[in-house]
Length: 297
Image (cartoon, rainbow, N blue to C red; front, side, top):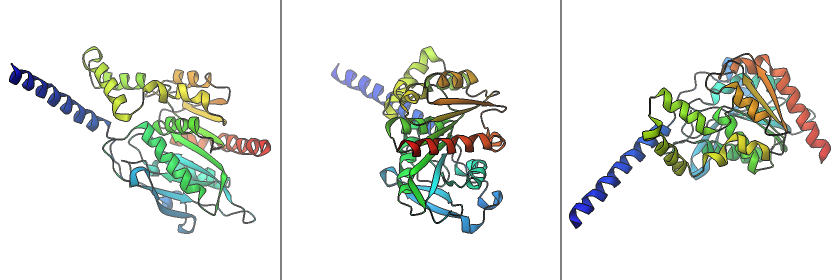
């Protein structure tokens, strides 16, 4: 009987271990190479630096730092741009040109497990937020950058991570959130439905295990929860034709904080083109947030 019980326990442990490894594989984002570089967007070598930032756990984070000419040798305001799940820093280049033209330095950063940054067993939205914190810490040490004039721009998971960072830190003057979801749970349920994972049988276990793996509950890290604690102005940019994250989630987010402003645009979840066509609105928002913070000090 003891041997049979031990065998049963070992079998259950083995099944759980196999499930854990399968979930880790599922949590790994596809690693795509950089399809474009600075030259593809008109930036000369004298305006862009390739840098390697010390990341969490000693993992290096690859990034491009774009530096516009300084005015009167004054330190520059800067925007850290974080891509979405399975993307990379190169996909955020469309945001760099208008920011550069407006006098903002831009740090385009690869999250861990993405682009040319270091690897991990899995990626997650809290880990994106940790990488944002590492990028901001590095920016504050650069002599060309004004350490008290930093802002964040994130797409999708990168946007949710930017809000998570800003919820717990007071080191940025503004957040531009592009195509953020309101809560991870509906997003994961849509994903599981697409993959035909039966929720009553496997989905509930998958949800619980993912939260154990990433070390945080979905309720704690959901933008609908974190946005209300963000103390700086937030611009929520969302595509009316977004089929990945319904526009209703952006509307729900906008009503959860008096500091949030909603900008609905024509486009889907990607919105790279919209970042260019609506650049004036983004720049006006960032400049206004910078001026508001400066007047308050």
